Image 1 (cartoon, rainbow, N blue to C red):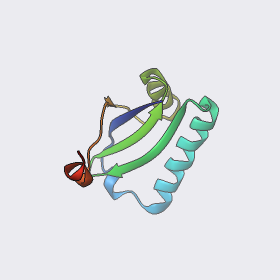
Image 2: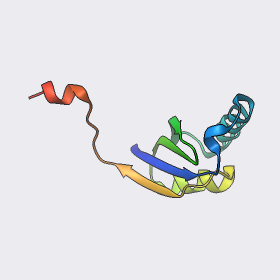
Image 3: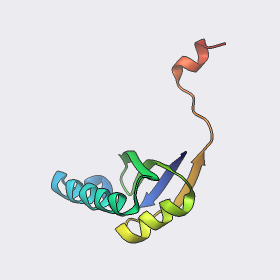
Image 4: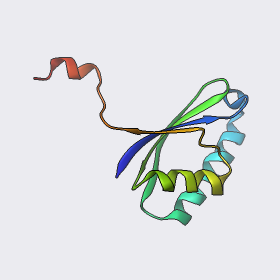
Length: 92
């Protein structure tokens, strides 16, 4: 599967209470189960008015389908081609 970074523009998402976030995660998980094994939510990061989500999916169309069904916008979807981290500096 390919890895994607999804930018979701959601006003004041960074101020949502725990219960609201729990309900949003539950809704997302419900849609993921409906779509099947070719899409997986890895994690999300919240900022003031944006959410950045990392997903694995067979193709970008599944990301957009999840966004449509769940009601969570996928403002920008970017396929991640490679990753680096601090240990990259030590590798040869």
